[in-house]
Length: 150
Image (cartoon, one colour):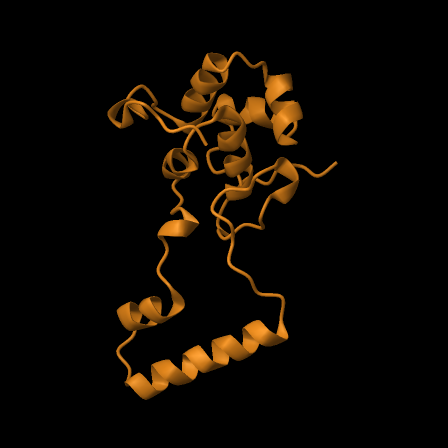
């Protein structure tokens, strides 16, 4: 992703996710159809996001849009009300922060988690996919708008 020259100006003009996306798309010189083609997201869905019909697109969709527009996906996550995956704590840190328990219990939970990771296809999510086809599944089950599947 292209770094943003003035971090203080990243979101200053944005009132909503849609307004910010529309401005960034226009600054990139892209039509909705061009952005749709590059992200793999339908132009009608993108239009509805820009016009405020959808406030919480799937995080993977936001990552793809950010990648194409050359903007920081954390800005889009913030506007949509999400926490970026790369800022989430590790499993052990989460357990220590959330629960009071003996070290032995924490160690047992970590061992169980490692066992689950060996038995199932568990992997850490990439912070930002490189191409639209590498979209990770959502870490955020509470997003309320799914892009319609073709």
